[in-house]
Amino acid sequence: MAEPVPAGERQRRLLTLVAASCVAIIVYGGVRGIEGFVLRYLQPQRGEMRSVSNLLLAAAFGVAIYMWLDLRTTRASLSSVERSRLVVETQLALAAEVQRGLLPPVPISFNHVRWASRLEPAGKIGGDFYDFIPTGPDTLLVLVGDVSGKGIPAALLQASAHSLFRTLARSAPQPSDLLALVSREIYAENAGALYLTCLAVSIDGTSGRLLYANAGHPAGVVVGKSGRRLLNQGGPPVGMFAEAQYQSEVVRVDAGDLGVIVTDGITEAIEQADVPTVDRLDAVLSTISSSVSPSGAPEQVCETIMALADHSAGPLGVLDWQDDKTVLAFMVESGSEST
Image: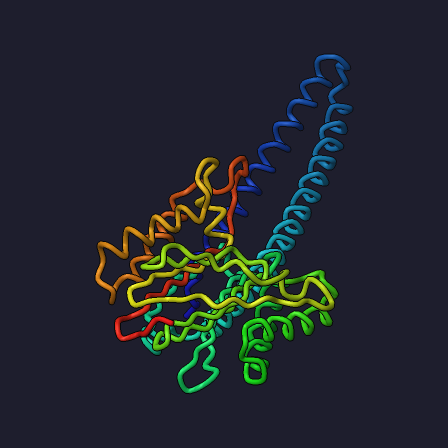
């Protein structure tokens, strides 16, 4: 018993038959047209007309065979392209799965600080990342980064940076020292061709102390009892220069303070000509901190800012703009003590 022909193969055979029929019709029409021309203007004898007809049919047959072979070659070439595209798409899907696996679970609450995050890559793979690295029993180093470029090179640098941060954080828990060490290693590998922006933050909710260093990243924003504070002190992007130094800053945080860290995919999406991006982030934080319970505030910040970015046109004058988008929000819980 013959095996059933798959639906896709049946469709391909039908298309081939249609194409062959079209070729036959075109060739036949062409032959008849040439014959009519010969009869009208050359007026050959009957025997000569038969020779002309045979010659025209032979030429038409040759043309039909050539077109048929060309059609088969084109079809085989397309099949090869489709197979290559399928291989690439499969590899990208696996790379995307690996990237998702590198993202750690978000510690909902750690040392009197609640966290939430959202990450949306522009394509299957992206250059944005975040990480939570324990550097002591009661200390947690938080990283939000954005690798330059897109596609596979950005994904490779992201994986390398993720490993470097985790490895070197044990010997350099201070944000500024860690950024300097990672920057040196990435420059040694890429000579400044690839780099990343990053905001490294360490928050102790018990003592009300936030220590950070910013490596060319969009400023983080914290709002609360002490007003608005920007996390914008630091140095150049990581890996851009052979030697880079970073300045750390200590910021006071109190119970109820709400903060957010984003990548430039967010800032560029929501920017407006007459309103600074930090003001828009400030407005979101202030509204949510006064209307949402502390337990759900970080989650609400992420959802609100991501929705705002998704429904924005992007940078002014830039068509078909796309970029990875990341939001990480935190709230200092009650029970902390301000410095």
